[in-house]
Length: 106
Image: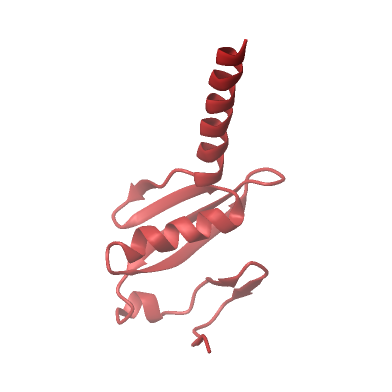
């Protein structure tokens, strides 16, 4: 019985982590998509692009169900014209900005 409980717990944890993590998939030339919990989706997309030495630029956000979000995004050089163009930027969990702004941390 103890062995079964441990196995079920491991499976539940693995499924739970997979649900939180989302799955980044390429959907076009330098276009990616990710789904999962909203905060995790943005964190993962940022990390994904950061590991390439680039910045994440959201293209589209969609609500899939009551707690699952999806975003389409690009990984761009911060100095590129495409990155500098007006578009959706996710600044915080509750703030979306539709123009270029500079955000600094103190």
